[in-house]
Figure 1: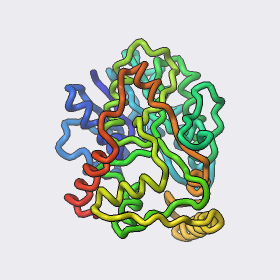
Figure 2: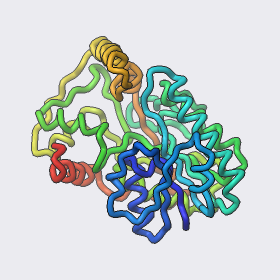
Figure 3: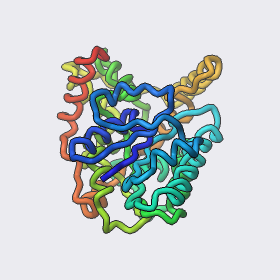
Figure 4: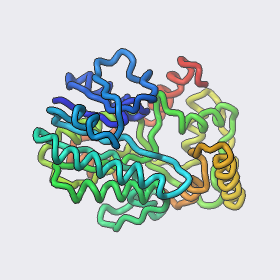
Length: 326
């Protein structure tokens, strides 16, 4: 198959490109001229320079493709409108281009997020598939808006919702590994918060299986999560164990976390660059849980994340150390 991957040079996108190439598919990547393409070094992929605001770039990149994996998006911004401009409007432009210029398209795959659904009730209980989406943050609302754009389009689509994603080349979860290396596992005080997680290589396999599942009804929404659910404290301690350390859990009061988020926002505005840690991120951290069931993907894609959590953490640590990140 000929596949276009938007955001293919990013953390998850590069893992997906590796998987597609390994299975013999022809891969195209849409990337801005200023993008760092080092994650694609050595991969036989065709890079089209441009972005979702440039019709000519989209026309060239979409010519003759059968699969479109839409990963490009914004995780952070100073306003909700900043995220909507990228995640909703950008998706709208890509969808319109696919309808007009990709007659051979067999599957449009939107990589969304559990944030689009909203938090789960708490503990190990997954969020019900039938529950109405209740996104909590700007990011979650913008990803849900992108989902609605895709579902309304006359395209054969699948919408995938990953949870927390970690693995080689990731910079966001790296900060937690660095704290664990020092023996510290900071977590919100009070009731434990629980999470579904998935490693990037396993997620890439799940995305490919979704593309291959031609019998899925268009507009299907599937979470792609590993089967094991962990608390924030347990995840941090297992990160520390992968580093050969003993992690000490440090409960952080909710008020202090909120103050830290506001402070991070003030610093980001002063610098002129939005940061991952923010008041919005604190809202996600303080939610009861972000847990989804692996069963829908197992039943409909015959996919279950194959790598045990401790093994995936160890592989991530090895990559970080080999590349001087830890």
